[in-house]
Length: 338
Length: 68
Ligand SMILES: [Zn+2]
Image 1 (tube, each protein chain N blue to C red):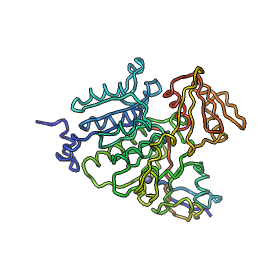
Image 2 (cartoon, rainbow over the protein chains, first blue to last red):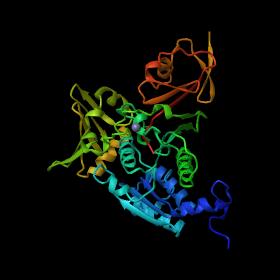
Image 3 (tube, rainbow over the protein chains, first blue to last red):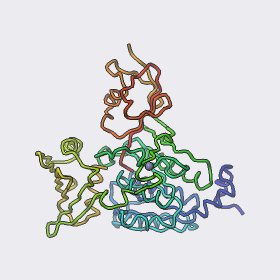
Image 4 (cartoon, rainbow over the protein chains, first blue to last red):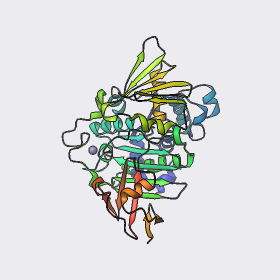
């Protein structure tokens, strides 16, 4: 009988043994946006045993040019991405036990979500969540395949795939106060697919027991620039996330953004952690072209963005007016700051 | 005198006013980014970004971005 996976089994580095390992793998896909869609589709077609995909968002028209699991009808139906992804992935390959979960991944729930999986694919859209996932994956001893992309540029890095290799926290000496995001500089779908393909290839290699290296890779599909580095030497013996005595700082809630709905004001307040204070002037400069009504004084920056008024205070608080929805507010801010 | 280097796999002509890695990063608009620099296959710690750029150096720069 010709198996669904015969062409994959014919690929010698996988073979029948590798396919059996893929069949037994339980994979977690963090985010069902662009990278998550693309990676999840490849993993489901490859025939992994179980795939869990988690996302906090509802589909929007602006997603369709790069988020390959979704259709116009899904947007019209205002479906959560995790739900639309689940049904599409099940239709692609009924062998796979697919589960979609609508949730915001936070320090409170991340360990519970990851538990029971053996591999994690990064499909999130901001560095804060990546560092949270890095800590959780290290604590649970699960390899985490990081990927990120904006514009025509993408990078990948596998974490926890080799004894004594550096983690994401080792590489990011300091958190960027803000970074490029798809909402500020745009993105084209070829870099999404390229980045997801690299992450997924590393993940499949890891499933099949290939020798892994901590290689940080980048490519810009528009300019043709590319880079690849073995970053083993960047392992920090005192890293709070991956040393011999780790404290997993991003798992404790005071290291990440805190949120609160301001009572009776239709406003959400986001409070940045102390290690990620946002500087007012660079922030104002970075958003000048994409927001309207930008105003600043020594104490705050305010602007209008996506029909919301945003106010950033010097003490690291931001108010998102016009919503009581914490998830929506976080999303708006993640869009601006990454 | 103009230096030619290999930057992220492409040949790149360094303008005369750029003498060090740090100046190159600023010239490329990457001065305030979180990034990792490799010079001639060795990862360069931040303290060494004042290292001079020599003709035919092989330089790779990977900067972190938020999206996905
Ligand atoms: Zn580390």
